[in-house]
Structures are given as structure tokens and as C-alpha cells.
Length: 362
Image (cartoon, rainbow, N blue to C red; front, side, top):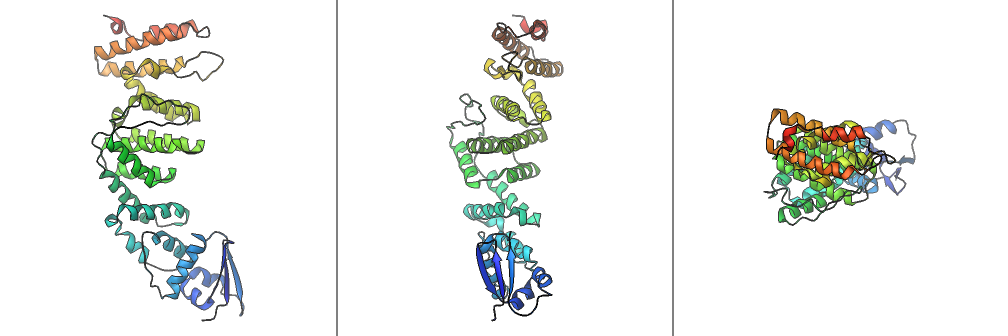
């Protein structure tokens, strides 16, 4: 077969192919080369999906008369290349329908390639099939006690890491490391988990582990912001789910919002979650650095906002013991901030009088 078409793929490799054969399959090339003169023609692709590997795969598909072995390792590569060249093929769409019967390693191979080629894939339902399968695998993990680990040793400094002592936590963490989800697909997986109504504890555990695994790496500030935003949106979407989320981690997320300059409404959402559970806090949880470095040492305005949220909750749920717990907590905080020469008396007074007298009755 006469090879009269030279194709440069992303500047990485050159292929010599039959123009007649490739244009008989490719609508894109048929339009592009319709006015070409006889003789050899050179075509340059700068952003071909999958590079030379993708082009070679679609060539095999064409030269073999649409016969090719589709596997989890090449299904999205073949699909993206075919879409790019406007080649009609239904093998990949049909193959992806069997994703729920794939092994975990096959699913991971496919997911990795899907993420690499995501910008080239127009059929979102194919991606959604993969995400549904991922969520199905996650739901099968044996995480009977998703928060059976301590957060007491975690310190926020832009990164987070903890040691988990439970096998279920390790299982979830290992699965996440193998998944290697990009931040964009993480958001879509979380959305799928919520849509499929997975157990709230499972979703919270997934959020927590993903953040821990990813924040240890060299993520950009933008990616870290996005992870925090997705987590807050998820906690807001699932009614009552934040009550199952480790309280201290909510505080770390709030500090992350301040450090990473996440949009203010996300911080306010977290403040409502934390404020409604203020009786669970320790003094250390309240020691948020002041955003104004040359004024107070600690963020007193934040504590006043949390206190306001808590009082609103108490009015609808009058539990005296919870009120007393917060009374003791605020007294400890007052002792901590009292020596601060930059603290205005009106702020100190607002803290001291922020709770009803019953909060300090022995």
C-alpha cells in the first residue's frame, strides 16, 4: 500500500501512511486533505491525544479493518484518538459498559489513562461509567469505623499528616494512593458518591483521607484551595454529615481557609459547623492566629462569631451541660488572651458576657 502521507505527531515521531486508507476512515483528515495535490503530503499534529502511542493505535485500528483488541489500558486512548480524527468506532463505548466487572487493577489502569486524556474526551457518560465503578469499589471497602483514629497529633502548617492505627484506615488510604485522583476527578468522585447516596461516614472518611494523602505532596496552593472547597461543599450537601466529621479537623480546615485565602463564604460555612459543636472544643482548638499580625495574638473576632453560632443552637436545643462546657472553655480562652496588650477592653468584655449566666452556675 502506497504511503504518500507523512504525519508528524507532536514533534515526537513521524509516520508514513496511505492517504487513501486513512481518509476513508477519518472525516477530519478527509476534509483537511480534500484539496491536496497528488504526491506526498506532510501533516503536522501538535496536540494529538496520547502522542505517537495514540496515533499508532488508531492506525492499527484502520489498517486492520476496524478490528482491534480493546483493553482497560487502551480504551480511552483509542476513543480519544478516534474522536480527534472523527473516526466512527463503537468498540470503546461498548467495552466501557463492562467496567463494573473489571478487577481493581484494570480499573486503576483505565482511570489513570482517563485522567491523562480527559481534555480530549467529549462523551462524559464514558467517564461517568468509570467514576461509578470507582465509587462502587470504594463502597465495598470495609470501613466500619471510619474515624477510629486520633487527630490529636495533627498540626496545620499548610500540610497535614497523621498516623492511623486501624486496618480500615490503612485500607482506605492505600486505595486512595493507588487511585491517584487528580483534584478535578476528586470533585467528580465526591459528587458521584453523594448522588449514589453512599454512607455519610464513608464519604467523610474518603474526604479526610484524600486531603491527608494529597496535602503531604507538592500540591499548588490553588489545588489545596480546591480540595478544601470540595470538602466543605460536600459537608454542606449531606445533611448532618459534619456532625460525624472529626471536630478538630474542621478547625484545621478553617485555618487552611485563612492560610490559603479560600473564598470567605467557605470559611463562614465552616464557622457554622464548628460553632454548632463548640462544646466539643479544647482551648488549643480556639487558638487561631490573628489575621492582623500587629494587633492581637489570637483571632478574638472569630471566637465571638463561633460563640454567636453556638448560642443560636442552644436556643433551639437547650442542653445545660453543653452550655457549661462552653462557659469553661471561654473562661480558659479569656485567661489566655487577657495578658495581650493589643486586645481591646470591649472585645474582652464581649467574650466575657457572650454567654448567659447559667453557663457559669456550678
